[in-house]
Length: 488
Ligand SMILES: Cc1cc2nc3c(=O)[nH]c(=O)nc-3n(C[C@H](O)[C@H](O)[C@H](O)COP(=O)(O)OP(=O)(O)OC[C@H]3O[C@@H](n4cnc5c(N)ncnc54)[C@H](O)[C@@H]3O)c2cc1C
Image 1 (cartoon, rainbow, N blue to C red):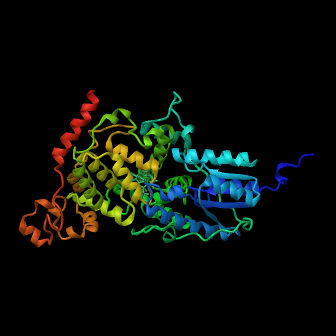
Image 2 (image 1 turned 135 degrees about the vertical axis):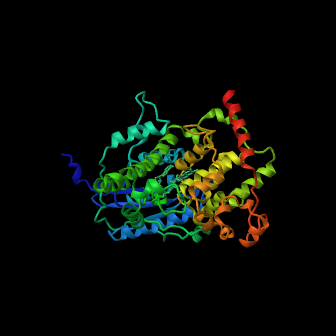
Image 3 (image 1 turned 90 degrees about the horizontal axis):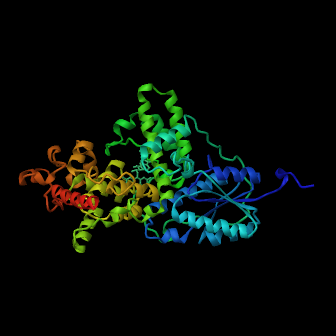
């Protein structure tokens, strides 16, 4: 007589990837349940991801910090994290053989690169006679769960959001972390430091790990979410959650974020509900871009709207383009709000969302540089650098993305500064050379007379550059180029 399923002793490998936490981890909870705690927790430091062109030291450091935190959580439950270096398609079969495990569980990822890699791993594991199971976890709603009435993917955010909200409703459930796990069955080398991997980190980075992510979420919900819609666009304000690197690496789940927001909203004054809804909208933007890249993998490298492939980027002089790009990267464009934002990125690995929109508009519309240049630079610096959100954000700003609006998305950097950093607090924080410039000149320091410059200890052209381009003239030319595409 066959044994009932629950009597079979199984051992399950859980392959951690973008889910570096124990609570509300769908595949990990299933692995713990199915194996009765006999889980082999594995993370593979994939050489391809450590050495690729889009690698950021900031993300490697945040990842390693989060792995150490995860290891501590596992040890508190009697287990530990096995960290192996190499190609997952080779490492995981070797771990499977060494541990005599019966199955490999993991949470699905949706980028073109991850999908190709995961198919190969699943194939190899199954050929070895073991089970390979993948789970939905990275998102609340998966790409194929939400399609238009014509069974097509959404390409416009507002109807996507409406459908998302109506499907998810006002309640979402989360899973607890397993209480106890089996003792480790495999040795693991120590978790490396960035220096062990030859990575130098110059930025001041946020801490990784699940406990830190939960602390940030609690603090945001308790202290700031009710003012989110009023203050979120002002980069000098600490008004947003700062959860992006945690959502990127899965030290917190989107369901945990949504649950906390919905529960707090239920208890909150009706007048503050709009603020909760605005924040929830941002979580939906995250899923929107994940499903865009899933359904339209060409957007990874090309314009989402292919007609813009004919658009001519650049000034015609490669040397000038390179010099302008270097000025943008270093925060030396002469437009204070742009430069402050780039310095924030370079020094901290994070940039405020309004500032991201401003610098992306400046790169594409004022410097006429291909959005892919900026996208790559962001990926090389951002601690939250995420292929879907970054690509979506850049194509949105360039006007080549899902809701192409090339003319309206030309931000005047001076007006943006005046509107969203009225006293210049953000500018002065990141550009100490402008610290003593009076408010009336803080967004246009080139208008200072020599006497003003003397008084504010800031000589334009020496301590701070003149604008490298004239916004009005640059704007007219890029509009002309976009219009030429549209009429053709
Ligand atoms: C050009 C450009 C590039 C960007 N690149 C990235 C990136 O690489 N990684 C990234 O996570 N976000 C990116 N964003 C989106 C946004 O700027 C950041 O998510 C946000 O600033 C993170 O701060 P926060 O965690 O305090 O956000 P909050 O305002 O607290 O929002 C909560 C969460 O919602 C998600 N979110 C918010 N806004 C967006 C958005 N516009 N698109 C997708 N998800 C969003 C993030 O996961 C964020 O943590 C980019 C935006 C632009 C314009």
